[in-house]
Amino acid sequence: MFGKRRVGLQFRLELKRATSYRREDFIVSPSNVGAVRDVDAWPVWHAGALALVGPEGAGKSHLARAWASRAGAAVLALSDGDAPDLTEIRGRPVLLEDADRGAPDEVLFHLINMAGVPGGGLLLTGRSPPSAWPAQLPDLRSRLNALAVAELPPPDDIILEGLLRKFFRERNIKPTDDLIPYLLRRIERSATRAREVVARLDEVADAEQRGVSRALARQILDNDGDTLDLFD
Image (cartoon, rainbow, N blue to C red; front, side, top):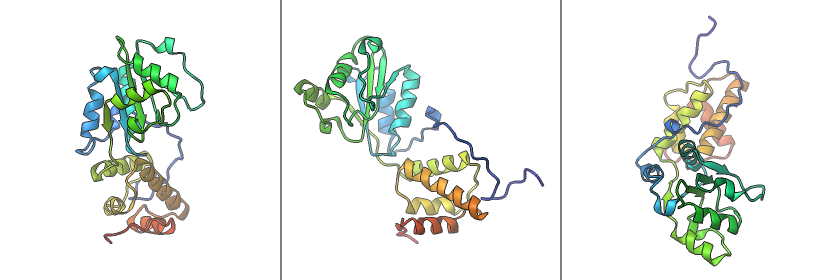
């Protein structure tokens, strides 16, 4: 009968989905609640600025973009090397992601100085603490060392399970009951890896007309060289 769903095996349309940064989709657990609380404390950050740090896949972009939406912040991208017109963003909140990856010293220095003006604010993201970021200007180094820091750890089991379920839902997949516990024991703890594994399961299940199951996951992870099954 048309429209009937089968566990783990359905026809799915390949749709390109925009990444969602909705705050309600951000998964909070005991491991990251402190960082979430620090971000939510805006606009009373010390000197108007906060650095949100953590490894790749910890959720920095999601939490930072959700804050930017709530705060009405200007979102800067310095990857192309172009310096922004700081006069246009003075007196408003600003988000600068990947500030540890070569943001020009002068720009970063002025952004931090502007953070404390009325209406301002600055959220910086990076993989390491600001004290480890490169800086040639002595005045910038002192400001980086003084920044308040909120740290996101790698996803714990609560977060990783929530991410896996979210990625399966986005692809209209109903996994077997034993699949997610199995993946929690085997995959790297990052949102990036969780998304990759779900996408790979989807591709192989469609190609082979199989259900999305623990057996399929084991085949894929073994073939991909991910042999971290310490509990099986």
